[in-house]
Amino acid sequence: MDYLTDILADFQDRLENIAKVDGINVELIKIFNNDLQSIRKDVEQTGKFGALLKKIDTQLDMLKTVEHLPGMSGNLEILREQSIVLMVGAFEVFIGDIFKSIANKDPDYFVWPEKDKKISIDIDNFRSSFTLGDAIITHLNNKQYSFQDLGSTIQAVNDYLGIKLSIDDDIGGCIVFGTSCRHLIIHRGSKVDQQFLNQTNDINKLNYKDGDRLKLQNGDVSELRIAIERFSEQLIQTLIQRDVI
Image (cartoon, rainbow, N blue to C red; front, side, top):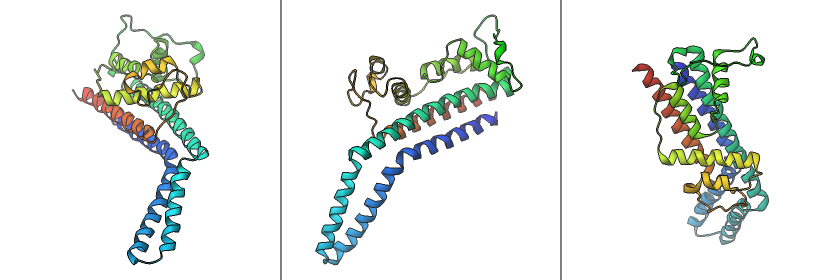
């Protein structure tokens, strides 16, 4: 099942590219800040150029201010939100690709929880590119599995791929937070609602209340990326191990 590791590698590349979007402005500020700090250190060691030191300190203070300007912080928040949306979307596609690829390449791998073991296919789905993988995804959709929901994803994997997947609470909590944020951003204009509060009760780091505006922090995007990657690596490893056994 080498094709699964290829799917994982492509997915990790996609996550890395998405994560870069959020860090562009922040990284530029860090570069400028580090350069100025280095120059300041060299100037200070000379014991001279007091006026120049003051100018450098003024520039360093300006960089701190720029990062927190309404325009800059607002743009950063938008970038973070869109990064979250893209990551959750990529995660959904990744899980779908796993089911499709196994169906098309190793259909015998599937277990079947339904007693009748039948798939209903809408005639409108028939086209030249239609595959068994497409049929499996349609069947899972009809059974109300959602790859945008972590619990539903794990259940689908357990039910149809025959593995009992359990994940660390921190990883699961981070992914649930990300998928819940994605729902708010897409469907609620980033406005916190009771559903979000219920889903993120244990990871409500900013003590959100109903009606608050979602405010993603610097580390939220990178934390989601790490959590999704670890979950995905564990999933692929477990699937391959089941195949070997």
